[in-house]
Image (cartoon, rainbow, N blue to C red; front, side, top):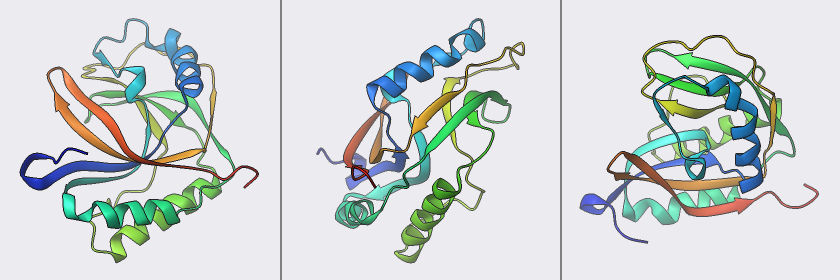
Length: 181
């Protein structure tokens, strides 16, 4: 792992999809995104953020890895069944019409664990979504998207690495849901 600027990195915890889940998400929302404008998020960067941590010192990586390793992913899926334009952020997202109860509890427990250890956490309610397009200045025409079922199988501690044209997301550590769990 390379050190971030000044010994700190921009980090977040996310559900990390398999390549097959990424492909299904891209297929399911392709028609809805046609002509939307903006900058599409590359398939290798697709993820479902659980908690954005911001700039975190490199010295905190072992503690964050321990938190991730102790987390027990729920045996359920989230269904991304709607396309939403978030005006303030200027993004199009694949969003879940309903949050699975186990995922909501998992996100709350992760947030509590981080907060108890002194990490900054978001105070907004958890809304499962995957950002698909950035820099979208107007709502696209309403087009139905095919619902995509995303199994909750992998948690990742991810670094946001700035690059020309956008960030690249690099998983620093991943934890798979135990088979049969």
